[in-house]
Length: 248
Image (cartoon, rainbow, N blue to C red; front, side, top):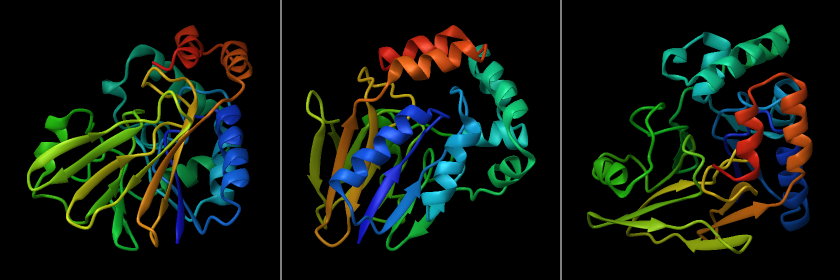
């Protein structure tokens, strides 16, 4: 079965549409679409981006920005730009969309032998960034493969007999495949569709083939200038537009 993994869209419609076009070209027969949270926040198209995800996804879990907008949770942890974007987003969304975000499942969620979560499988708001973060989870993972988001850093970690190895993102290339070995645990991040922070501004996504046990990461060029212009025209913080062009 072929799974499309999307995460951290952050209301960036240009990036999301570019990803979906690339998926259609590369994988015309995707079986299931899984979204790892943060549909909204930062970007200028929260309603349309959420509609896209609702229309194509089989399983969607909540992210911290989804919670902040729909439930008012975690705002104390947000920087000023993120907080301003949250309040702006709240004013843009229809009641039905807010209800949809409010009712998103909390990760981790089990899907056909693996799990999906937004942050850590132990805490949906916890970041998995370093080898030490992954090491902390050794012996506490319930499945051999866990797909997560939240960090906006494509890549992940392989844990083999207590040793943690980093899985790098596909740079400067646009694709990189990782064979999944039976004797290991994997923490895999498809990267951020709408706001990458790994110094690569291209939109990120991944595909997992459960039959061939192959995980493939992709990067896609998109119309960054249009996304930036929308952010500025909406009166959102300039920082949120600027960072799109540098991937940080």
